[in-house]
Image 1: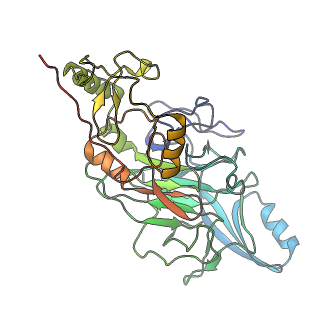
Image 2: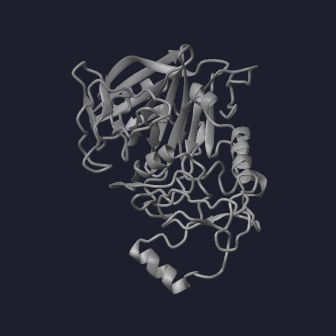
Length: 391
């Protein structure tokens, strides 16, 4: 199981555990550059725990002195604190929920974080905004019984089992009386329609600490929340995208993964494509897509593609641009060079990702390649044109 073993944790592997689903960080094409280790991985599998660790709201306390706050927090219960002023704090205590499992995802390496994420590759330069790095944490709560619904919430409990929303944080009291709020940079979610057979983009929404759904703020860290999205839910669907302000994750349900292509299926497609004997129209040599273990080395018959037109060739040295021209191309926004592995997706999948803007920084959205996170220009996808054998 991917959840780290913690002191006093009864969550041990069991035979044939129920798999709720997987969270995949976009931009790494299956593995981190330094390798997947411990809690820091490019994909996270969520299994039903041997013992439920979910929590649910119970008592609400209105505190007027720091001493009152110490008394409540000393009980060892999970809690969320909403600081209204120097003299008043609302603390919502949480009790054990035997019907749910909770998983926490974020950049922090504190022990309560089950899955430590790395920023989406290519999504921004390192050091672009260091204040974002530790701040955005979310928690996924999965029902232990069918249909194993998974719901997303903003913020995560720290090593003291607390979530603190300070005096300057965006927070409010709902008409039913319960407190809620938003994290500094927000947790955004987009639920696609018709995924994966005929996917269409949904609207990006923001998730609150208590799991309600809101329209986006004017800016990512703006002081005022968006309008409540009536009738919408924080329940994740197959193909939902979760953005933690720098790291974008794709959610695949356990059922969806059963229908997803396997490595054996992709290998059969590779062999079928090679059996058609595609040829280089320049050198008239037969091209061949390498197997997965050899995909990172340059093969003599490796196919190459001109992204502007889609024609597939063998490698040749003529027609290459100089470094100066490459730099000028980057300034002009053209795609002079791209190191993304050749995409073997069907047309509608390629179009879906090319037309799906992902959050970028605190203000912008842009479509990127889900495998390498290169920014896509319009139309963002290219139909590949192969030449068949001349015999």
